[in-house]
Image 1: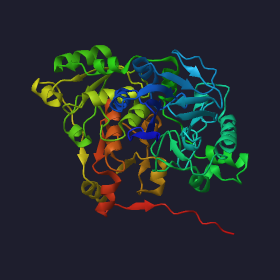
Image 2: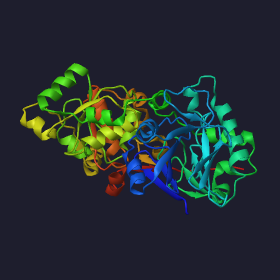
Image 3: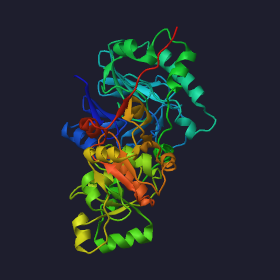
Image 4: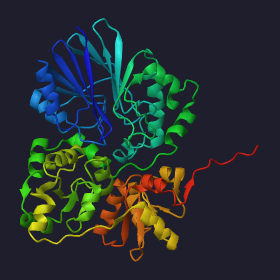
Length: 475
């Protein structure tokens, strides 16, 4: 009987979970926190979920391992670790094999991204290795960053972890057959690596040829230098997610139920005042700009919502109140819970329409098209903030613009004078509204959003843009 493998990819987190099934038994690798889809998948196929395999203690999301085990009776499996979990788990050893129907899954301990990091090798009924579920050890085009575990275990250094990762890749992964399919834990867009491919699977043989970190003639010193160069600080919520994954957490069912409590405008205002909650408005940026609850932050569901919530809000215990498009409150609460933001207290019933009908005070954010920015620049000097990443800014930027990346909003805020007017842009208009709304909530009232961002600026053609030129090497 053929072994079924299904990748369940979540773009918002650039995360890959996996469903494996053989002869009526199933295993889930690195499940997201909402586990109903996995249970339904197994029920539909008349399979029993036997194992939940975890490649490591995740930092960028809260895994569904606990809820999934509680609801199905499955065994949670981790690689070797000295960490004491707050739930029952089987701590496996290097080379340990697990029977799944007629297939076998072998645990391969691959420390480096974290010390407990492990990959899982799928072996079919004929004894042939077919697939490698590589977690955050090996990505397509990249390998896992080696600086996250030191945020949890102080005696670890990124250099030590990078050395472990070199050994794991050379001694455990690269000797495997070239035709094995690699199924990684993340793709492009995840903060767990720095240059991942948009592809979400590949053969190991092709990765040996194309992945910079798997070159056979690479020394350990060169490897360490390559993977540490260009690392940017990880989002601040990462260590909190690691601890949730180790110690345990409240069921997502209860979290979503609490987060989707309908609040009338009066009740919403009372909870906001008494709890000190941040109002998180998940509507589209330009809709938000036209009318908002005073002090609300805008992080739209249509973008990389979870990533930007974690990056800008940081504290997973921060109480939140939601303003959403009609019917989107459950999606918002669920996506917040995926990254451990469990303190959502409810949502504004009836949305902004109800708020306005109740006579509540609103604010608006000024947003102008690129044409208007061009006219302003013709009239004289203007202050422009580019909130894209430094690498984006370096590749091309408006002449005279100051780079204040949203990724490091705390540092960027220190560069902004509250008494000056700034025109703020990103690539498309999503991040600029996040930036403007957060700073507005902190008292910065003179920020103007540029609709359409760099895309609109380039289409306008009248705004001078500096393009990156590689430095000339003189021999």
